[in-house]
Length: 297
Image 1: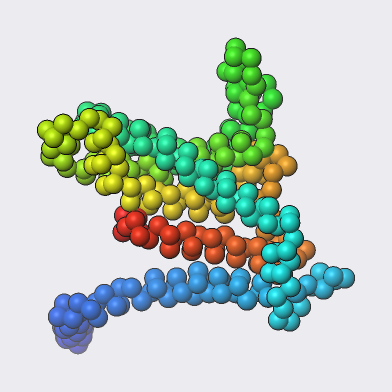
Image 2: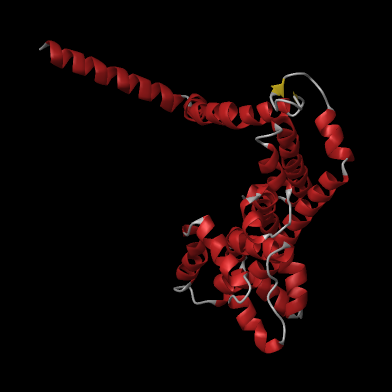
């Protein structure tokens, strides 16, 4: 009897609590978001704060131990050393080149999968686009190393034209990163093209616009926010990558390589270098915010 009374009381408490949450949607939303927001604040934003603070520390030149003394020497060296400036500009250039190549390749692919292919084949094509993401990152990069190596597939395919493959270096890095992040550009463009109203295209044709004019005046303005949304992934992932350039980049150095090289010997300098991609990506997000791309993510 006591057990039944206790169970009934427990069920009554649960019902009252459920009713209270049902009547207060804001409280329910707050409780649902509290845990993930705390996780984000403590681990992600907290780690960024520690990174930024440690960038103002110094390192003992004899013992390589971190000295927690406030100094701006790391940022001064970062801004005044030509090698660092070149690496930063090269890294941003690589990220922009990968983004542009992904957009140029992704648009015709997405247009075919969203507007040209038969409706029953479209889900299968989207799965095919996503399939490379299921493979291991290192497997894909080492596969491209084999393709681009001397006597590899690239040399074999280009031999009839009297030229050789790009080998290892900056072009190989851009090519490999383009392959890695291309699905992140195709998917948002595919979604935007799939949602493009047919009556707009029909109206453009009825008004006498040719295909090129329809693309410039109707399709591109509506799809541009999705292109910008995809560029957030391609740009940020390329800017922070350091494994691909180590495998296929030859002697090329990017920001990630410098961070990796300094993290053991000069942690404050590595932290100062690590703030550069964060600042660049924040500026990039602010720049594309006006396109409405962030709402398309």
